[in-house]
Image 1 (cartoon, rainbow, N blue to C red):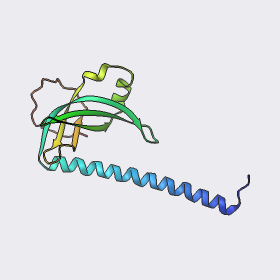
Image 2 (image 1 turned 135 degrees about the vertical axis):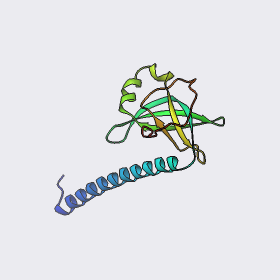
Image 3 (image 1 turned 180 degrees about the horizontal axis):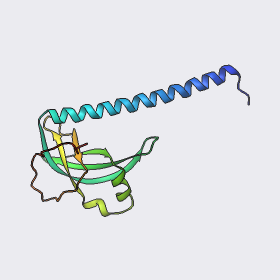
Image 4 (image 1 turned 90 degrees about the horizontal axis):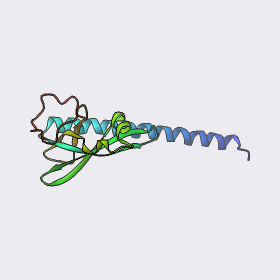
Length: 137
């Protein structure tokens, strides 16, 4: 099957447009994530302890995520954060089922949260507002 010049140009155009759409989408997601972070940290927020729920890979680049579940006023929420470390540690073992992390969530919208994966915490930890929020993502 032979393509004429016009068909080749259309195919190349479609591929270029597809790549541009993917790049724009990633850029918008990144900006939305940063806006969400700023909104939570600049507003009223609370802190609680969240529990590991799952890990997975997503996207063309194979980005890896950890999902952490937390409870606010008896209602369960979950938030996902990119994490290559925990993906490799948790994907094939039960070791992560008892891992807990600090979670900051918006008082106004508890489904908006940030997670500190830099250190695990004990489930019985008395939670206080952290001095630094730099590790929350």
